[in-house]
Image (cartoon, rainbow, N blue to C red; front, side, top):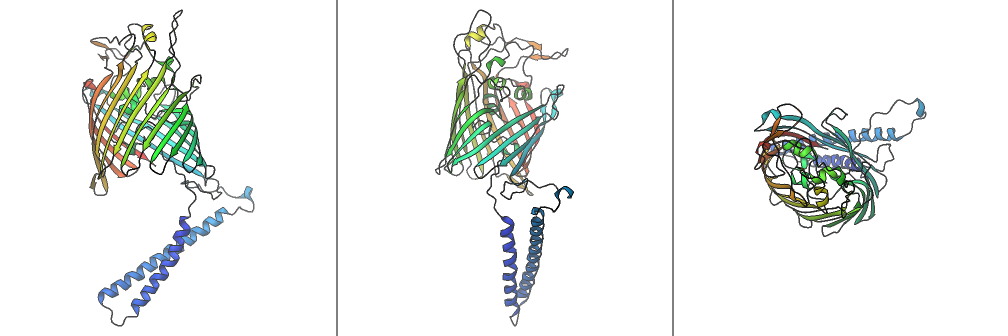
Length: 481
């Protein structure tokens, strides 16, 4: 997410001053050179170059004066507004206090397109406009701002298409003091390295890592309020009260395996917190949750942090005449580190979640391949050469990542009853295969090719140790502005 909160600088005024002063200074230098009686060829070339620069700067000065005059004319109301022609579109860049209709508006966005090719099951290759996200913000005054993001997934969103349209963020920020601000609305949770910084130019590889997709839900957001503080020593603290999870959404009886390859593992909402988060869509507000996050960035190139979330959830419906004992509580914690020494980028994340009192719900659904886990966890280690190799103005940044995830690190009441042998993967006749395992070790190697800091092409290979048919080659395009 890109938030641009500025206090209305006046870059054109400064540029105009430079344009007025520099020609005079260069003209003086030219006169001094002209006063010499016996100029050498080198001095003559220098004098000619100074004169050229003076002419160029004079042209810049004229252009700035013209732009200033146009801006002043545009800011003057017409004598008869009703009869005036429609105004030209306004270029929206950063918040200002000019009073113009769009002067306090911010726009930003990001998106990604990719090709994924399973190397063992090539018939499942897919090309997808994974997401197109557009942000709109408004600076009400120097202390209060609004920010929002709207996302279209998989290109087309309709009842008969796989895409979705959703509001990803919608919140107000109000500065209470130079070191503290209050946030209220629908906002991203301050967990891990990726959740608040998930634009494709900000991470290595075509897809987001599995730990910050399956254990910490990717782009996890909740509705509520959050206090954010930051000290001059680089210590930042976030405290919030938000909505929580709805475990009644968990599917104990899937007709087919909930995912069949790495792409559907990420996209189908099969992980415990993916499947049960509410996204402020008619969210159940009976239970409030709390979170705290701490980050330290006081040493250049180093970031250390941790976060904790906990709260009662909407429980699994009890069977008739058999109430489930105890409240079901969701807890998630994580720790992360990032170090960027001498052009390298080294990072690590560990995350673990838990759900209490799951035994009764699992015993009420015997023989299921998908009991509700009591614990789930994962970690990754990643190394990249961030400065990259210069390829004629392009930057190639190679990376490698090892990660482990386990969607069912522990169960209470009953363990998964996974069918053996070949099972139907869908309603299509003959479409069969093994039921996938909910844990794996994944090794990824690849590179990001930056055309500009805002446009990146990506290529990587992922090798899965347990679900071997999930191994794949990915090719992607990402942008952010």
